[in-house]
Structures are given as structure tokens and as C-alpha cells.
Image (cartoon, rainbow, N blue to C red; front, side, top):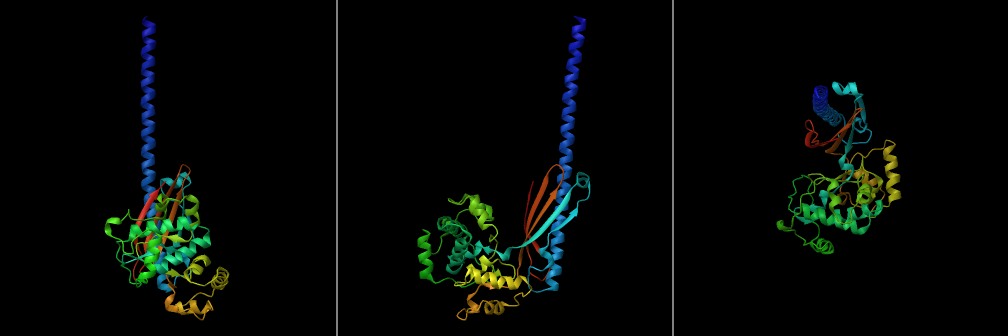
Length: 319
């Protein structure tokens, strides 16, 4: 009995020791993960700072925003600190958000902007988004942003009331949206997944061409795709837009709005009717810290007024 009791005591002590060692190992892993997250956060914030300096230098060098700028090149570097020992590597890229259609444009001072709604409708048709989900998206955006006052210096006049009324009726909305009708504010393109009829496939088709920004914006002809340019100019074919932008990408950048409209070779088109410019003030910075164990992701939206260092509007982190 004495031997059995001794063996039982030894077994209990061994089990307790194993449990304590397991807890200690888990605590060490949690501590290491916490340290890695803190270092990753600071490293990724450094990528945003680098993007801010790069955009500021580009604004001083060139007043227009073009695809041949230094900002349009992804940059990669070896990470430092603890994550460097894990093979950590930083990769970042800057995207011109004004090379996309801004869903915020669908609303102007509480009313539906008919011209922008027509642009979005044409864009959806070109990229293969059916009419039903396209109308559902417009309704979601308009209901969400109907109470937002136009705060941009480039705010445009209200659409013709009778035509806007017809579109509102088609979307089952009043021409002027009451504040009580507001849905949760649309802040990111991923929020559209909650819209009936909009799935990951629809979002994948729209993602290269559509964005959500805090203010109304114009499309940048020096960075936009042929699909977006063709949608932005009524009567412009996709083939003609591709031909014009092919010349642009060979170095014939647009120097002003008049230059853009002249190259379209559409004599009936008035430059003032085209909501397409040559520069950009909104950029998205996406950074990834890739380590042996996991990936840290950070996305930031920058507003560049061309007068000072770009301002961080929002910043999101993920793993």
C-alpha cells in the first residue's frame, strides 16, 4: 500500500507539473503573439507614413495624377525586429480611388443624382452585373446617404426633378429622402453583401471599378479603366475608350479636361457635361506583413489635398 500510495502521489505531481508547463507554454505563445502584433502594427503604420511621403513628393513634382507616377508601384522590403526572425516581409501598394466610380456620387444634397445613376447603370452593364442587383445597390446607397450634405468643393447641381423622380419611382424611393428612412451608413464596398441579390460574384465584378468615399468625386481620366471612361461619357463605345486609353498608357497623358474630350472625337460632346478630371485626391494604401506563422493586413484611406502631407481618413487592421 505504501508503494501504491507513493506511485499515486508521483503520478499526481507529474500531472500537475505537465499542466503547469502547458499553461506556461501557452502564456509564452500568447505573449509572443502579442509582441508580434504590436511590432506588426508599428511596421504597418510605417508603411502608411512612407505612402504619405511618396504621395506628397509626387504632388510637388507633378500636378496631375498619372499611372506612370512612383506611387503606382508596389514596394516590398524585409521587416525588422522580432518578426524579421520569422522571415517577415512587408509588401505595400497604393491605389487611386478616383480611378473608380464613387458610390457617394449617387446622392447630391439629399437628392438622387440622375447623371451619376446613369453612369453606374452603364458601368454595371459593361462589367456583367445584372440590372436587378444594380438597382438594389443604388437603392441601398441612396437610402444610406440620402441625408448627407454635399461637402465637396466639386459638388454638382441637382438633377432634373422630373427625371430624378422617375428613377426614384423605379427604385421605390421618394425623390427627396426623409431622415427617418435612413439605413446604416455605407462605409465600405463589402457592406453591399447585405443587399439582397448581391453576392461575392457581383462584388468581385464591381470591386476593380467601384469604391465608397466620404465625398463626391470626379473620375480621373489618367488612371481610370476603359469600362469606367465609357460609362462616364454617354454615347462613348467601349472600343473607342480602349483606343483612347491605349494611347494614354503609351505616354500621351491628358493635360486637362478639354484635352480629354477632344481626343474622344465626339464633336457634340461639351466639356462641361463630362464629370471626368485629370487628378486625384483619394488613395488607398494596402499593406501586408507576411511571416512564417501568419499574415497581418492593414488598409488605409488617405486624402491628399496637394497642399500638405496626405491625411489618414480611416485605417483598418486584420490578420
